Image (cartoon, rainbow, N blue to C red; front, side):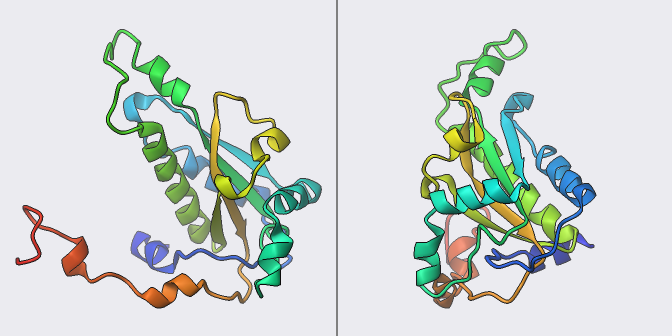
Length: 196
């Protein structure tokens, strides 16, 4: 698939057909996620792949999926055959930037582990599309107890859960009704100005 098509087709999907995803496809998606850049090659991103139905059901319970379904949505987390939890470790970045070839302060104005986690997340989302699959994302703040359930170490923080599978018809988010901001408000050439 061409990159431009993967970008065009990518959207957050929250309902899946009850079909298994091949382990080979999952491995290609994981490889893409771990190919994302990291500041100083710190490699602070990690992925937890969950295919076990019981564990996926526990994640759905932690996220209070019934409350989501009561609002008229299909069961999302429990219906996705694959969950990929994207995680980051700030400690990996702090350690890396104390090494002799860096020797730099780790008092950055931006916590780059979150930037790199976002890059890994986008790579996972696009790789799923490239595999002919669909993906959605639920932030970790909506899944209290996720780290404990999956045994994620204290020095590692989950960003959230990427659901992966074959798409089924789903109810689109009401947020989409807002439409996109005009390019004149979001793209600026040479300097921040909307006056060309």
